[in-house]
Length: 194
Image (tube, rainbow, N blue to C red):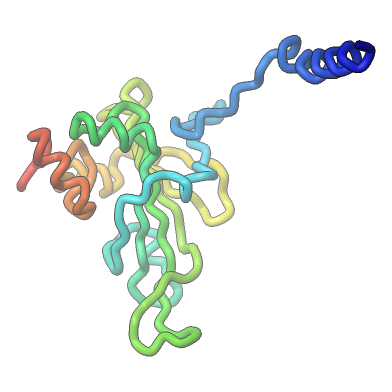
């Protein structure tokens, strides 16, 4: 009987902190976060997000132009999971959709490689955010310095705004370069053919 009371007391003590202390909810890594100056925080866990596509030599922004090797860079595109799931259901990107364009150098010599290209060092990180209440035109673009944790939205005069508005197949985004999303957008009637 004493053993039963002893075990019950231990169980109560182990559970008490969970009952008595408020639960701390983690920061939602699915939504963009800004500092007091309105600068976007670099998404720290974007490599755990949904990978949409990769390209070689398709990047044209300042980071790609500053590539010291001169070889065409790789770009990897990731989107936050909540936005991805919403897109699958609706064919459009929801508010707070966040895309990360990771630019990496391309290399052709290393290990046993004889002729192909593989991804190398990080060159730059660019982010596109849909935040309806924060940005005129709903969308904003950010370019992060290699060691930076915050970035200001690029000015509306930056070429990325016009290019995405004119050539994005779905809601300001280049879905046309993500084959698995093209069929989703077409099924929902949101794919712009031109």
